[in-house]
Length: 99
Ligand SMILES: [Zn+2]
Image (cartoon, rainbow, N blue to C red; front, side, top):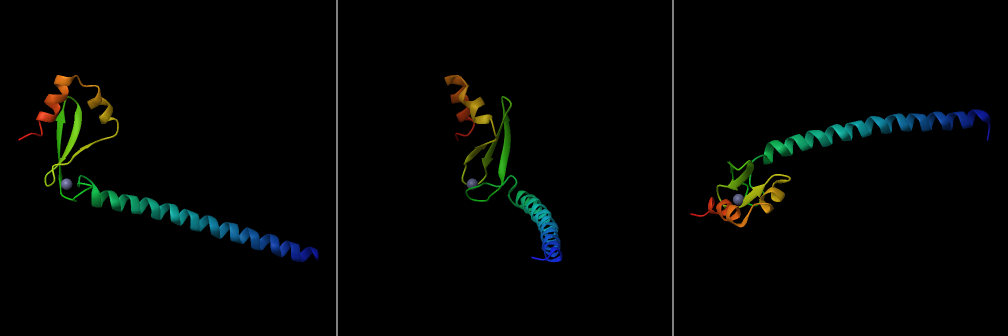
């Protein structure tokens, strides 16, 4: 292989890496835009039936209840908080949702 060929190969490789980086940035941006779009689409919507969630506060636990299927959703870490409630506290907690 002539030295100039090796150089060409090197620059082609560089060119590829440069373009790849640009593409990767684009993918990252797209992923963020998609995440943002999905969030807008799904925020405070029931993951099961898609209807609006109603947010209530009970002892510092933010509970989202579906206005349609009555599913109850907890935010990250809140299950642990609920699990720590005494039996009576737990009964009170669930009585909120009983009709
Ligand atoms: Zn629902």
